[in-house]
Image (cartoon, helix red, strand yellow):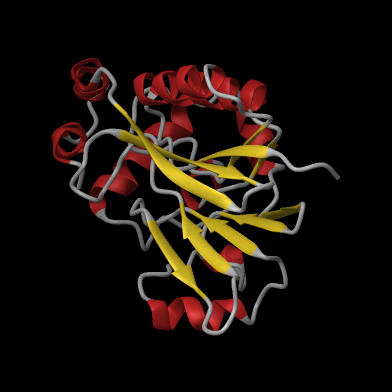
Length: 229
Protein backbone atom coordinates (compact mmCIF):
# COMPACT_ATOMS: atom_id res chain seq x y z
CA UNK A 1 0.00 0.00 0.00
CA UNK A 2 1.32 3.45 -0.91
CA UNK A 3 2.37 5.89 1.85
CA UNK A 4 -0.34 8.08 3.34
CA UNK A 5 -0.69 11.24 5.36
CA UNK A 6 -2.89 10.41 8.32
CA UNK A 7 -4.86 12.68 10.62
CA UNK A 8 -5.57 10.95 13.92
CA UNK A 9 -8.23 12.40 16.22
CA UNK A 10 -9.46 11.26 19.63
CA UNK A 11 -11.48 12.21 22.69
CA UNK A 12 -13.94 14.57 21.06
CA UNK A 13 -16.32 14.24 24.01
CA UNK A 14 -19.38 15.67 22.28
CA UNK A 15 -17.67 19.02 21.72
CA UNK A 16 -19.13 20.10 18.40
CA UNK A 17 -17.21 23.35 18.17
CA UNK A 18 -13.83 21.70 18.72
CA UNK A 19 -14.62 18.87 16.30
CA UNK A 20 -15.74 21.25 13.55
CA UNK A 21 -12.58 23.33 13.97
CA UNK A 22 -10.35 20.25 13.75
CA UNK A 23 -12.12 18.75 10.76
CA UNK A 24 -12.03 22.11 8.97
CA UNK A 25 -8.27 22.18 9.58
CA UNK A 26 -7.88 18.62 8.27
CA UNK A 27 -9.90 19.40 5.15
CA UNK A 28 -7.49 22.25 4.32
CA UNK A 29 -4.46 19.99 4.71
CA UNK A 30 -3.00 17.33 2.44
CA UNK A 31 -4.57 14.48 4.42
CA UNK A 32 -5.48 11.16 2.82
CA UNK A 33 -6.95 9.24 5.74
CA UNK A 34 -8.68 10.21 9.01
CA UNK A 35 -8.74 7.83 11.97
CA UNK A 36 -10.71 8.42 15.18
CA UNK A 37 -9.57 6.72 18.38
CA UNK A 38 -12.86 7.01 20.20
CA UNK A 39 -14.60 8.81 23.04
CA UNK A 40 -16.76 10.65 20.56
CA UNK A 41 -19.29 11.25 23.35
CA UNK A 42 -19.26 12.04 27.08
CA UNK A 43 -18.86 15.34 28.95
CA UNK A 44 -20.09 17.62 26.14
CA UNK A 45 -23.52 18.64 24.89
CA UNK A 46 -23.58 17.47 21.24
CA UNK A 47 -23.27 13.65 21.25
CA UNK A 48 -25.46 12.91 18.23
CA UNK A 49 -23.90 15.60 16.06
CA UNK A 50 -20.39 14.41 16.89
CA UNK A 51 -21.15 10.75 16.22
CA UNK A 52 -22.65 11.58 12.85
CA UNK A 53 -19.84 13.96 11.87
CA UNK A 54 -17.12 11.48 12.83
CA UNK A 55 -18.92 8.65 11.05
CA UNK A 56 -18.91 10.68 7.85
CA UNK A 57 -15.37 12.07 8.16
CA UNK A 58 -13.31 9.13 9.40
CA UNK A 59 -12.07 6.10 7.47
CA UNK A 60 -11.91 4.06 10.67
CA UNK A 61 -13.32 4.67 14.15
CA UNK A 62 -12.25 2.94 17.38
CA UNK A 63 -14.49 2.70 20.44
CA UNK A 64 -13.61 4.57 23.63
CA UNK A 65 -14.67 3.93 27.22
CA UNK A 66 -17.17 6.82 27.25
CA UNK A 67 -18.70 5.53 24.01
CA UNK A 68 -19.06 2.08 25.56
CA UNK A 69 -20.46 3.54 28.78
CA UNK A 70 -23.06 5.58 26.90
CA UNK A 71 -24.50 2.40 25.37
CA UNK A 72 -24.34 0.29 28.53
CA UNK A 73 -21.35 -1.86 27.59
CA UNK A 74 -18.92 -0.47 30.18
CA UNK A 75 -19.75 0.11 33.84
CA UNK A 76 -19.72 3.73 34.99
CA UNK A 77 -19.09 2.72 38.60
CA UNK A 78 -15.42 3.74 38.30
CA UNK A 79 -16.22 7.10 36.67
CA UNK A 80 -15.85 10.24 38.76
CA UNK A 81 -19.19 11.89 39.69
CA UNK A 82 -19.02 14.42 36.83
CA UNK A 83 -18.21 11.79 34.21
CA UNK A 84 -20.94 9.54 35.60
CA UNK A 85 -23.55 12.30 35.41
CA UNK A 86 -22.50 13.12 31.85
CA UNK A 87 -22.65 9.44 30.85
CA UNK A 88 -26.17 9.06 32.23
CA UNK A 89 -27.26 12.23 30.42
CA UNK A 90 -25.68 11.04 27.17
CA UNK A 91 -27.57 7.75 27.40
CA UNK A 92 -30.84 9.70 27.29
CA UNK A 93 -29.74 11.82 24.34
CA UNK A 94 -28.28 9.34 21.84
CA UNK A 95 -30.51 8.32 18.98
CA UNK A 96 -31.12 4.59 18.43
CA UNK A 97 -29.10 4.77 15.22
CA UNK A 98 -26.12 6.35 16.90
CA UNK A 99 -26.27 4.00 19.88
CA UNK A 100 -26.18 1.04 17.52
CA UNK A 101 -23.23 2.57 15.69
CA UNK A 102 -21.22 2.98 18.91
CA UNK A 103 -22.04 -0.57 20.03
CA UNK A 104 -20.52 -2.01 16.86
CA UNK A 105 -17.17 -0.18 16.93
CA UNK A 106 -13.95 -2.19 17.28
CA UNK A 107 -11.36 -1.92 20.06
CA UNK A 108 -8.42 -1.75 17.64
CA UNK A 109 -7.60 -1.35 13.95
CA UNK A 110 -4.30 -2.11 12.20
CA UNK A 111 -3.37 -0.42 8.92
CA UNK A 112 -0.06 0.07 7.09
CA UNK A 113 1.95 -1.33 10.01
CA UNK A 114 0.22 1.17 12.33
CA UNK A 115 -1.99 0.18 15.26
CA UNK A 116 -4.85 2.41 16.40
CA UNK A 117 -6.45 1.92 19.85
CA UNK A 118 -8.17 4.12 22.40
CA UNK A 119 -6.41 3.00 25.57
CA UNK A 120 -3.60 0.43 25.32
CA UNK A 121 -2.58 -2.27 22.81
CA UNK A 122 -2.75 -4.81 25.64
CA UNK A 123 -6.39 -5.60 26.40
CA UNK A 124 -7.84 -2.29 25.17
CA UNK A 125 -11.22 -3.20 26.64
CA UNK A 126 -9.74 -2.75 30.13
CA UNK A 127 -9.32 1.00 29.52
CA UNK A 128 -5.84 1.25 31.04
CA UNK A 129 -3.58 4.29 30.65
CA UNK A 130 -0.01 4.89 29.50
CA UNK A 131 1.43 7.69 31.61
CA UNK A 132 5.13 6.84 31.71
CA UNK A 133 8.00 5.41 29.69
CA UNK A 134 8.04 2.38 31.98
CA UNK A 135 4.38 1.64 31.19
CA UNK A 136 5.04 2.22 27.49
CA UNK A 137 8.00 -0.19 27.40
CA UNK A 138 5.77 -2.96 28.76
CA UNK A 139 3.13 -2.20 26.10
CA UNK A 140 5.65 -2.46 23.25
CA UNK A 141 5.71 -6.22 23.80
CA UNK A 142 1.95 -6.37 23.24
CA UNK A 143 1.86 -5.26 19.60
CA UNK A 144 3.94 -5.86 16.48
CA UNK A 145 3.28 -2.73 14.41
CA UNK A 146 5.81 0.07 13.96
CA UNK A 147 3.68 2.67 15.76
CA UNK A 148 0.73 2.46 18.12
CA UNK A 149 -1.48 5.55 18.30
CA UNK A 150 -3.46 5.98 21.53
CA UNK A 151 -5.72 8.54 23.21
CA UNK A 152 -7.62 8.18 26.52
CA UNK A 153 -5.46 10.38 28.79
CA UNK A 154 -6.05 13.59 26.78
CA UNK A 155 -2.33 14.38 27.15
CA UNK A 156 -0.06 14.41 24.05
CA UNK A 157 3.02 12.22 24.48
CA UNK A 158 5.56 10.18 22.52
CA UNK A 159 7.35 7.09 23.82
CA UNK A 160 10.17 5.33 21.96
CA UNK A 161 11.11 1.70 22.44
CA UNK A 162 14.64 1.16 23.70
CA UNK A 163 16.97 0.13 20.87
CA UNK A 164 14.27 0.48 18.21
CA UNK A 165 12.45 3.03 16.07
CA UNK A 166 9.05 1.79 17.29
CA UNK A 167 6.83 4.34 19.02
CA UNK A 168 3.67 4.79 21.04
CA UNK A 169 2.10 8.19 20.35
CA UNK A 170 -0.67 9.71 22.42
CA UNK A 171 -2.42 12.12 20.09
CA UNK A 172 -4.11 14.27 22.74
CA UNK A 173 -7.74 15.37 22.77
CA UNK A 174 -9.96 17.25 20.35
CA UNK A 175 -12.72 18.21 22.77
CA UNK A 176 -11.20 18.24 26.23
CA UNK A 177 -7.40 18.74 26.35
CA UNK A 178 -5.74 18.12 29.70
CA UNK A 179 -2.21 19.41 29.10
CA UNK A 180 -3.04 22.97 30.25
CA UNK A 181 -3.51 24.10 26.64
CA UNK A 182 -7.23 24.60 25.88
CA UNK A 183 -6.76 24.45 22.10
CA UNK A 184 -8.13 21.36 20.35
CA UNK A 185 -5.43 18.83 19.54
CA UNK A 186 -4.92 16.20 16.84
CA UNK A 187 -1.96 14.44 15.22
CA UNK A 188 -0.74 14.31 11.62
CA UNK A 189 1.54 11.45 10.57
CA UNK A 190 3.35 11.09 7.24
CA UNK A 191 3.87 7.43 6.33
CA UNK A 192 6.50 8.27 3.71
CA UNK A 193 8.81 10.30 5.95
CA UNK A 194 7.87 8.56 9.22
CA UNK A 195 7.39 12.01 10.74
CA UNK A 196 4.47 13.60 12.53
CA UNK A 197 3.38 16.40 14.80
CA UNK A 198 0.55 17.59 17.00
CA UNK A 199 -1.65 20.33 15.59
CA UNK A 200 -3.37 22.78 17.95
CA UNK A 201 -6.51 24.61 16.84
CA UNK A 202 -8.43 27.42 18.53
CA UNK A 203 -12.20 27.03 18.66
CA UNK A 204 -15.28 28.70 20.12
CA UNK A 205 -14.97 27.58 23.75
CA UNK A 206 -17.65 30.04 24.91
CA UNK A 207 -20.32 28.33 22.82
CA UNK A 208 -19.24 24.82 23.81
CA UNK A 209 -19.22 25.75 27.50
CA UNK A 210 -22.57 27.53 27.31
CA UNK A 211 -24.18 24.44 25.77
CA UNK A 212 -22.88 22.30 28.63
CA UNK A 213 -24.42 24.63 31.19
CA UNK A 214 -27.74 24.89 29.32
CA UNK A 215 -27.93 21.08 29.15
CA UNK A 216 -27.76 20.98 32.94
CA UNK A 217 -24.44 19.15 33.00
CA UNK A 218 -21.92 19.84 35.80
CA UNK A 219 -20.45 23.34 35.57
CA UNK A 220 -16.92 21.99 36.01
CA UNK A 221 -17.20 20.37 32.57
CA UNK A 222 -17.64 23.83 31.10
CA UNK A 223 -14.95 25.53 33.19
CA UNK A 224 -12.24 22.99 32.42
CA UNK A 225 -12.50 23.73 28.67
CA UNK A 226 -10.98 27.14 29.32
CA UNK A 227 -8.19 25.71 31.44
CA UNK A 228 -7.17 22.70 29.37
CA UNK A 229 -7.23 20.35 32.34
